[in-house]
Image (cartoon, rainbow, N blue to C red; front, side, top):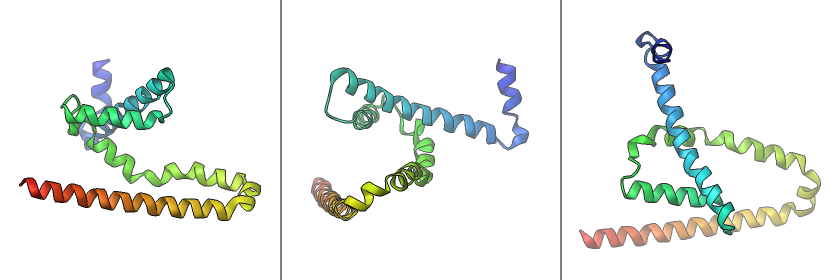
Length: 138
Protein backbone atom coordinates (compact mmCIF):
# COMPACT_ATOMS: atom_id res chain seq x y z
CA UNK A 1 0.00 0.00 0.00
CA UNK A 2 2.82 2.40 0.88
CA UNK A 3 4.51 1.85 -2.49
CA UNK A 4 1.19 2.50 -4.22
CA UNK A 5 0.88 5.90 -2.50
CA UNK A 6 4.50 6.67 -3.40
CA UNK A 7 3.72 5.81 -7.02
CA UNK A 8 0.70 8.14 -6.99
CA UNK A 9 2.59 11.02 -5.44
CA UNK A 10 5.88 11.03 -7.32
CA UNK A 11 7.81 14.29 -7.32
CA UNK A 12 7.72 14.37 -11.13
CA UNK A 13 4.10 15.44 -10.95
CA UNK A 14 5.10 18.68 -9.25
CA UNK A 15 3.74 17.69 -5.88
CA UNK A 16 0.18 18.09 -7.17
CA UNK A 17 -0.88 14.76 -5.76
CA UNK A 18 0.53 15.55 -2.32
CA UNK A 19 -1.36 18.86 -2.32
CA UNK A 20 -4.52 17.00 -3.30
CA UNK A 21 -4.10 14.47 -0.47
CA UNK A 22 -3.39 17.25 2.02
CA UNK A 23 -6.40 19.27 0.85
CA UNK A 24 -8.66 16.21 0.95
CA UNK A 25 -7.55 15.37 4.48
CA UNK A 26 -8.14 18.91 5.70
CA UNK A 27 -11.61 19.05 4.14
CA UNK A 28 -12.38 15.65 5.65
CA UNK A 29 -11.34 16.97 9.08
CA UNK A 30 -13.66 19.96 8.65
CA UNK A 31 -16.51 17.66 7.62
CA UNK A 32 -15.84 15.47 10.67
CA UNK A 33 -16.55 18.47 12.87
CA UNK A 34 -19.74 19.19 10.92
CA UNK A 35 -20.87 15.56 11.12
CA UNK A 36 -20.09 15.42 14.84
CA UNK A 37 -22.17 18.54 15.36
CA UNK A 38 -25.04 17.01 13.39
CA UNK A 39 -24.83 13.84 15.48
CA UNK A 40 -24.83 15.79 18.76
CA UNK A 41 -27.79 17.91 17.65
CA UNK A 42 -29.74 14.81 16.64
CA UNK A 43 -28.92 12.79 19.76
CA UNK A 44 -29.59 15.66 22.17
CA UNK A 45 -32.66 16.90 20.25
CA UNK A 46 -31.22 20.42 20.23
CA UNK A 47 -32.99 23.25 18.39
CA UNK A 48 -29.59 24.43 17.11
CA UNK A 49 -28.40 23.28 13.66
CA UNK A 50 -25.69 20.65 13.82
CA UNK A 51 -23.41 22.70 11.59
CA UNK A 52 -23.38 25.48 14.20
CA UNK A 53 -22.47 22.97 16.89
CA UNK A 54 -19.72 21.65 14.61
CA UNK A 55 -18.32 25.15 14.11
CA UNK A 56 -18.40 25.69 17.87
CA UNK A 57 -16.54 22.39 18.41
CA UNK A 58 -13.95 23.48 15.84
CA UNK A 59 -13.59 26.85 17.57
CA UNK A 60 -13.02 25.18 20.95
CA UNK A 61 -10.55 22.73 19.39
CA UNK A 62 -8.59 25.60 17.81
CA UNK A 63 -8.67 27.67 21.00
CA UNK A 64 -7.24 24.87 23.14
CA UNK A 65 -4.75 23.72 20.45
CA UNK A 66 -6.41 20.35 20.01
CA UNK A 67 -6.49 21.17 16.30
CA UNK A 68 -3.80 23.41 14.85
CA UNK A 69 -4.73 26.11 12.34
CA UNK A 70 -2.28 24.65 9.82
CA UNK A 71 -4.22 21.38 9.85
CA UNK A 72 -7.30 23.02 8.30
CA UNK A 73 -6.08 26.28 6.69
CA UNK A 74 -5.69 25.12 3.08
CA UNK A 75 -8.92 23.10 3.14
CA UNK A 76 -10.89 26.02 4.58
CA UNK A 77 -9.36 28.42 2.04
CA UNK A 78 -10.29 26.06 -0.79
CA UNK A 79 -13.89 25.75 0.41
CA UNK A 80 -14.18 29.53 0.72
CA UNK A 81 -12.79 30.04 -2.80
CA UNK A 82 -15.29 27.55 -4.22
CA UNK A 83 -18.20 28.80 -2.11
CA UNK A 84 -20.24 29.89 -5.13
CA UNK A 85 -20.59 26.24 -6.19
CA UNK A 86 -22.53 25.52 -3.01
CA UNK A 87 -25.24 28.00 -4.05
CA UNK A 88 -26.08 26.19 -7.30
CA UNK A 89 -28.51 23.72 -5.63
CA UNK A 90 -30.31 26.66 -3.99
CA UNK A 91 -30.64 28.44 -7.32
CA UNK A 92 -32.04 25.29 -8.92
CA UNK A 93 -34.53 24.95 -6.05
CA UNK A 94 -35.73 28.51 -6.64
CA UNK A 95 -36.45 27.67 -10.27
CA UNK A 96 -38.20 24.49 -9.20
CA UNK A 97 -40.63 26.33 -6.91
CA UNK A 98 -41.77 29.09 -9.28
CA UNK A 99 -45.34 29.03 -7.96
CA UNK A 100 -44.26 29.60 -4.37
CA UNK A 101 -41.82 32.27 -5.47
CA UNK A 102 -44.48 34.10 -7.48
CA UNK A 103 -46.86 34.01 -4.52
CA UNK A 104 -44.39 34.97 -1.76
CA UNK A 105 -41.55 36.51 -3.79
CA UNK A 106 -41.84 40.08 -2.45
CA UNK A 107 -42.11 38.82 1.14
CA UNK A 108 -39.06 36.59 0.70
CA UNK A 109 -37.01 39.40 -0.84
CA UNK A 110 -37.95 41.73 2.03
CA UNK A 111 -37.03 39.09 4.60
CA UNK A 112 -33.68 38.46 2.90
CA UNK A 113 -32.84 42.18 2.66
CA UNK A 114 -33.89 42.98 6.24
CA UNK A 115 -32.13 39.96 7.74
CA UNK A 116 -28.97 40.71 5.74
CA UNK A 117 -28.98 44.30 6.98
CA UNK A 118 -29.49 43.12 10.57
CA UNK A 119 -26.64 40.62 10.35
CA UNK A 120 -24.36 43.23 8.77
CA UNK A 121 -25.23 45.80 11.44
CA UNK A 122 -24.72 43.40 14.35
CA UNK A 123 -21.46 42.11 12.86
CA UNK A 124 -20.15 45.65 12.38
CA UNK A 125 -21.11 46.75 15.89
CA UNK A 126 -19.63 43.63 17.45
CA UNK A 127 -16.41 44.05 15.47
CA UNK A 128 -16.09 47.68 16.58
CA UNK A 129 -16.72 46.69 20.20
CA UNK A 130 -14.11 43.94 20.08
CA UNK A 131 -11.54 46.20 18.39
CA UNK A 132 -12.09 48.91 21.01
CA UNK A 133 -11.75 46.35 23.79
CA UNK A 134 -8.59 44.93 22.23
CA UNK A 135 -7.16 48.46 21.84
CA UNK A 136 -7.81 49.30 25.49
CA UNK A 137 -5.97 46.19 26.71
CA UNK A 138 -2.78 47.01 24.83
